[in-house]
Image (cartoon, rainbow, N blue to C red; front, side, top):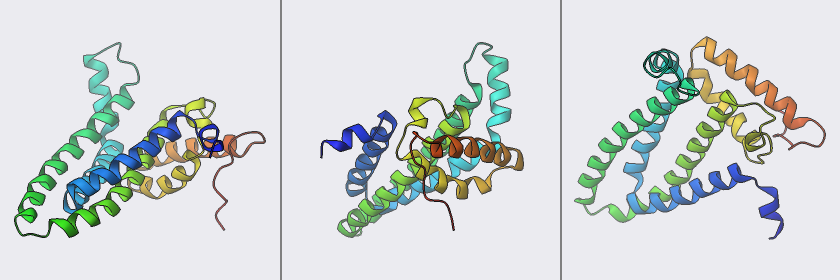
Length: 191
C-alpha cells in the first residue's frame, strides 16, 4: 500500500478525491440529480469548447492583464451551464422524493456519481492538456491523465474543427512525452 502515494502526483490525488466525493454525493443526492449534473457537465463542455474564443476576446477587452483568458472563459462557460442543469435536477429530485422512491434513487446515484467523476476528470485533464505543456509536471507526470486523455478524444469530436485540430495536436505532444523513455507510460495503443 505504501507504493500508491509515490505513484500518484497531486493531480492524480485531486482526481481520486473528486471520484470519492462524487460517489458519496451520488448516494446523498440520488440518480436524478446526478444525471442532470452529468448533462450539465456535458453541456458545459460543449458550450466551453464552442464559445470560449469569443468570450476570451471579450474578457481580454474588459480585463487587459487577465492571465490565460481562454482558460478563464472555458471555466466560466462550463460552470454556468453546469449550474443551470444542477438547479433543474435538484427541483426534479425533490419531486421524486415525494413519491417514496428515494432509496433506489440514492443507490443508483452512487453509480451515476462515479460516471460523473470520470466525466469531470476528463474535462479537468483536457483543459490542462489544452493550455499547458507536456513538460509541466502537474500533467506530464500524472498516472491517470494519459487514460483520461484517450477518453477525452471521443468528447472533443463535438468541438468546432479548429478546436479539434488544436486538441489533437496537443494530445499528440502529450502522447509523445508520456511514451518517451523514463516518462509516465500512457494508455495502451489502440488496436
